[in-house]
Length: 353
Ligand SMILES: NC(=O)CC[C@H](N)C(=O)O
Image 1 (cartoon, protein in one colour):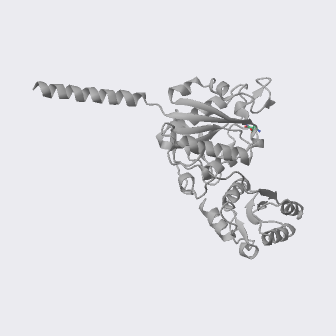
Image 2 (spheres, protein in one colour):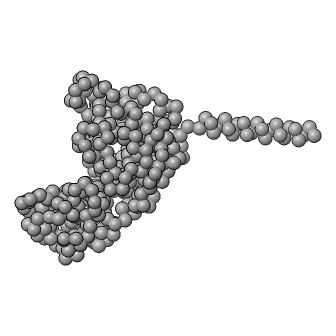
Image 3 (cartoon, helix red, strand yellow):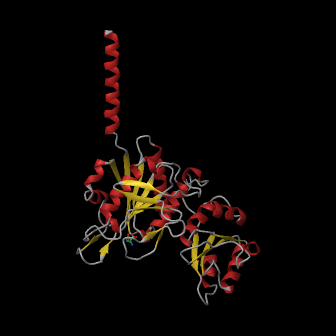
């Protein structure tokens, strides 16, 4: 009888320790800072003028002490630039660091602070090159840290809460801004100043942040992260790809310049359903003959650039971008060119990612 009581007491004690340990468990989230308005400082709290990327990650985090309640925070400064200066070298460095950290058992997720100008491009690059299903969340702000109603602190709190939640596993790289969770494949900046600038215009948001918790309503069926075929582990330089705009009366000038500069690929931001002026189209057809990959995308913000609409892609050896905008098409084409030059194989990638 005595032994039975002792065993019951022991079980109760073990259960108590188990509950206590789990109640205390806080996920470890790494914040990798790259700059942008979220780290921006203005000379006044009411004017728009400010300098992006001028405060450090530690100063940034001191504005959101409550994130320490939801996660153990570790922070690193990877860069401190306005994202108009984001570039392939920082992308490679960032992606390699994210992969290194997420391999560690004691890291549960990553938050990346980033300027909003090219945030969608970085998010998509990471979506295709991060080899983990742990959460990776990009965040920025539209108002500098010194402004009245700065949106940065709320966005950072939400981003950390999103990365710390097990619900965010396997969702691909996301951006959290203005209480929305946006998928890397579709997110785009739609307004130059508004705090609600980001949208997923084709597919809709993945969900919202509500009371510090992610509420997901959609999942992307596109290939990403652990299902991506791209691996940048041993890559130190990405193939050069340029984006060229089409508009009424556009000639071959920029296509010729890109060919002469030795690019490996050209993405067109065409009119309508990825159409291009006849002059440009002829120049692009000649570029393909020289071994340059050409992807047709569109300057229109919604809808696909579909194959074989007004342009006979097979005749010219062009690839259609489907739902990827020109800037994300550039990201995918750079990665595609690390594997193949074949336009049909590149077309397969543009339908799967
Ligand atoms: N709102 C912003 O983050 C814009 C600031 C800057 N141009 C950048 O993209 O980093």
